[in-house]
Image (tube, rainbow, N blue to C red; front, side, top):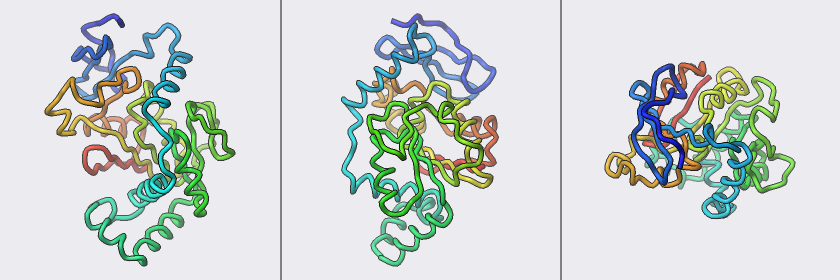
Length: 262
């Protein structure tokens, strides 16, 4: 069991986060200034980096399957639409209805390809989205140190060790990844650095505004994997991240999507 402390320095600001929950022996701390829920499991772990690799490999085999290629392709186009289409971002219902019109679907894809010429799937997992979108002419690569897939377009390394030049990408998306990141602020700073000016970062991760969290608190499903879900965000936390990492703005849709503009 990790030693509990009353307070720990918040990863997003200079304030102190306060002890809130203990989940499976791992303490979570909440920053009253940032409204950011965090644990320090990997910072406190004696063999943090190697143990994190093993833990994520086990979790991937148990929980994070590769997914059906068709569904993953649709998910990839959904992310690109959310990054480029005003309709997709503002109204999921209207966008879904319009997708039944072939001309609209083709228009959104052409628009995405034009505006997002170079893309990164950060935390690409098995890399199915990367491989499927590349088949349709999208210039995209994936970065994931825990990826089990050997593919020329997937870098199986950490983001800093990938040594990506500044301003490389027009767009970056990340799906159910940022809750796994211990070094939150450093990661967002690096993601911003490799975006071109005017580029967009789309983040999908559940936030504390989720009604399920409001209702269930420490029984919320997101908190039942404390070894891998180490960073849980809120609107306030993401606005602080945008400010500190140097993004121009951040906007939200629902309780799990955030779009950062450089």
